[in-house]
Length: 413
Image (cartoon, rainbow, N blue to C red; front, top):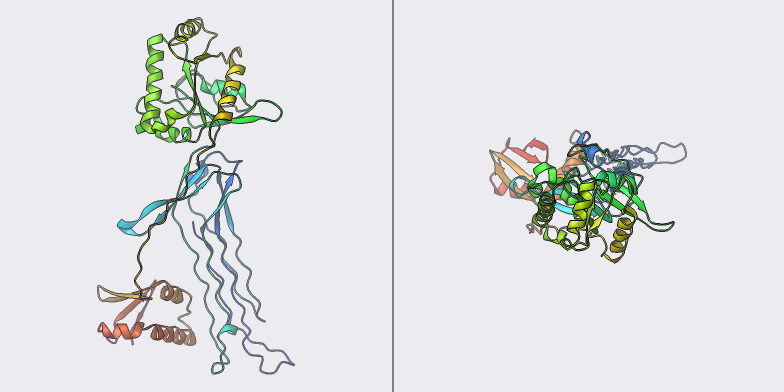
């Protein structure tokens, strides 16, 4: 993500017929645009970021004559799904790490991830009693850049979990307007599907179909680690079991799902869960349901094909949602405190090059027009005032040695 660069200041003069000694009148550059992430309920996946990974806001326009400021660059709004967790790369080299800076859990929530640069000052700002006709202006300040990692944890009131081909997508398609792919083979669903379940005219809840989990899902088997993170955001779970399997396989599959939830996060098993046998339209599923009712407390049975038990399951889930606590929102990680030296700058000798570092000095170098003698003179005066030149002499710098400030290199003289 790259914010817009500030517009350059202008060197201009007032040349009006009845204004004697008009003086400098160069306008300031406009501010660069910010890059803003915005939670958009109309987006459900991060798939678009697989194909477009670089975003840049508009730069500010240069200043104009007659003290007219340049137009500010337009902010770039990047829509992301509700529930996107934003990590930002902080530090350099071995010290770099991704820090969680926001959890965009509410529609319309915004986060500025890169701020636009300040516009450069026009020559009107550099006029003094001894320098009444400054022939230089500032360049615009570069905008911030940010390297982000986006992680989506879908927000839903209720989630359907289970082994592949348990009938989760079929149930979602029956109780909501969602139309997930339904087929008679495992792993038909490759990404979570959301649907809105209408209870009555005034009440509804969001249901998510989590793709089938298998043994080892918490460690990444079958992309399970990508799916389990969505389960964390649900308030209630429906554990759907394929009733057409033999009873020993049903019990083994139930244990597998519970162990995978526990291995990912023990808190998942603390969520209200409704265990439900599917496919009651099959004779074997009906027999299994009757046999297991006494062994699995609160066991329910449904047939998405005939609608049997579906309404009761939906209302049972709604009652659990009403009693369940609200959705968890992750707070940002506290920034790591780095003690800075008291000096306004630091100088290191690297391979014969004197490298001057410091936020103020580096920003000044980026905004100075080194092709302009007056601007260069101002830059040298600021360095002398800050004590940079004195420190260089103390370090033994000689005529012709190279000095680097930011991306700018020049020969010491």
